[in-house]
Image 1 (cartoon, rainbow, N blue to C red):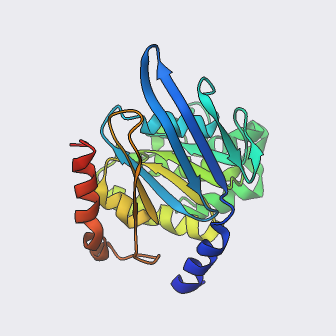
Image 2 (tube, rainbow, N blue to C red):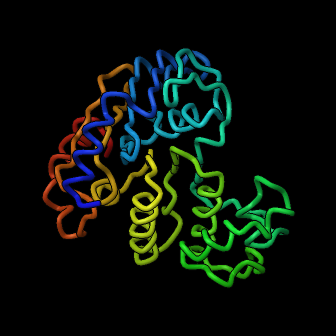
Length: 256
């Protein structure tokens, strides 16, 4: 699919979003964290959430994932109301969170228990993330970047329609981060996945995303949405074209 065809496809399906989240209020005690937050994501779209620490980015991600149900609002996926965790929504955490006593294959197929290690999809996914032949290794035998590749493969194992990522590359070095960003962009395109990504990295948001949603530190403030005009796949040197727009929005949102 060419970049133009991809843009046309995204525009055609945006009438009926894959994800529709409406968070009227989420508070911790008396302190509101999210208030009157609308978020729509089309199938195949990549959206980044950016903003100041404590503005509710990770909380919103957990609500969409079904990990946090103590809020006023609703989440719909493909028009169906969501209550709790679903296989249609995958989640990749800030750290790989691999089970140290399980092999790489067993971690990828954790959804099926240890018997899932021989599932043919495990080998396919590990090859796709550049870890062919690593099936029998334990997490302690992996580098940080390799462990996060396993986490990506595990996130894909249930064939989700939407993949959520909470600062997934913040714990690795800059070079590994760049390689993992490229891998994520390629995997999302091949699988036709929608992505919702929390990040503090402006360049990462621009490189990966079709839209950047800026949350302000003050709950209830109107969301700022920056469209990324650059077609996918992108070259890193193109990201600078939109950086100032995002940086201005972040400054306005008191993100730094």
